[in-house]
Image: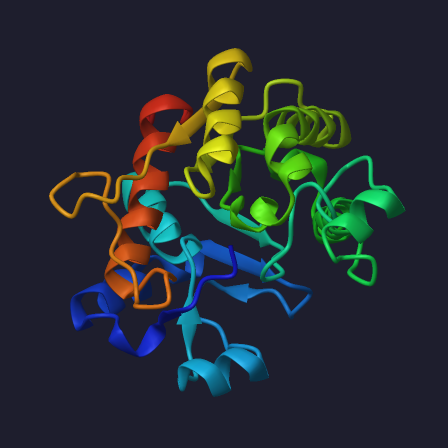
Amino acid sequence: MEGRANGRKITREDQARLKNVQKRIQLAFNHEPIGPLDVVSPSKEIRKSYRRDRIFGPELFFGISLAEAMPNEKFLFIKRTRGSSSLHGCWNPEWSEDKAVLMGEAKHPKLYREYVDYVRRVLDGYSPEDYELCAMLWVQGESDDKAPEAEAAYGATLRMLIEHVRLDTKDKTLPFILFQVGSPQVVDGMRQTAAKVPNVTLIPQSQNPDSPDFYEKMENGHYNDKGMKKLGTRFAEVFLRTYASPQQ
């Protein structure tokens, strides 16, 4: 998820929370220079369409919540995004031209391989003794409803993605936390994956405004600042409850 929540709407209280933990969280985002976790500058397209100069995704409040809960730890987030990209096409670990053409992504980057190379380049700047891979977060699925074939294969392709991530990171049990988005068939693939694959957790989403699993959106369907804050916080809650090592 790229994230298009308005960075100018973050409350003063949350700005103070970010400032208090910012020095302990580094963000590598889409090949930009690595720096402290913060809101980011949008692409020209987003800047024009949304009329905003600062945006954030779930990583912002995920980081704030983690750092507050784990005051003795430092964090590095590596994020690669591309709007309207499919798992069946350019995120597919076993990319093929036929699948990319089917999804209208023949000219898009091969994002899975690019992502793995990006992670390795970032981590090359650190000694292996100085870090531990803790989890991968995944917010994607809506673009796979472009083709029935992609929808039907989503669960199998997702399982393949997780398998490849764990092989490429040399961590057979790396936690994988994903958020429910997409068509019913895509969501069914997510649920089956979370049920069958160890260390995979699906965060549910409801369209009922009264549900605790409801995430507020803008009129165009993208999450607003409140919805994005809630999503980032929920990712942190799941990680801390399910996968984090006990704090001393």
